[in-house]
Every structure is written in C-alpha cells, then in structure tokens.
Length: 111
Image 1 (cartoon, one colour):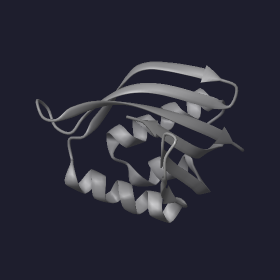
Image 2 (cartoon, one colour):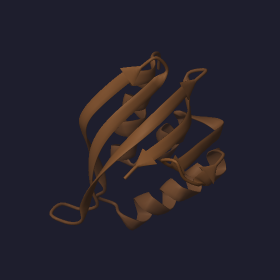
Image 3 (cartoon, helix red, strand yellow):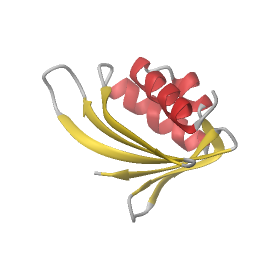
Image 4 (tube, rainbow, N blue to C red):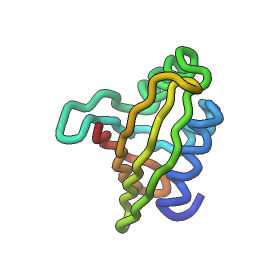
C-alpha cells in the first residue's frame, strides 16, 4: 500500500471480498469509526474487527460500489452505494477516511 487512495481502495476491495484480515490490515490499531459530526461508534482494531465480522456474517452478499472518490492530502472521501443483497436493501454513504502512517486512522460516515 502506498498513497491514501491506494489504502482506501485496498480496504474497499477487502470489504467487498469480506476478507476480514485484509480489511483490518488497512486500519491503525487505534483507529476510530464515527458518524459525521457525531459519536464514535468503534474505537480500536478489535472493535472494528468485531463490527465487521458480524456485518459480513449477517450480510454475506453485502457489496459497496464506488460512485466517486476525492483525495485531498491525507484524506479520502468516497461516495459509495451499498447493497446488502442483490435486489435487496441499498443505501448511499460518504465515508471520509483520514490516513496516517500508511493506515486508516479514522473514518467519519456521512449518511
């Protein structure tokens, strides 16, 4: 992994493959996930791993399609369309990734 966009792209590919180890490898040990302008929902890699293990188990066909990506310095803003299953529930989200030391340090989700 090299630049911020590459790190986020690797994370998205691992998410779509539901490869929990590869997904978590993109995150810093002390990474946080939060709602935009809101509460931190997950703090630390163990919490992020637990959250995504459950998500992958609950939605085995879950996929996120990249609509657009903007890179500004060490920040990456994605616009994604997420579907839980083919023809099932779908929604849009704009995660804002903060990259530090070659890993995702924080994600703020705009929903």
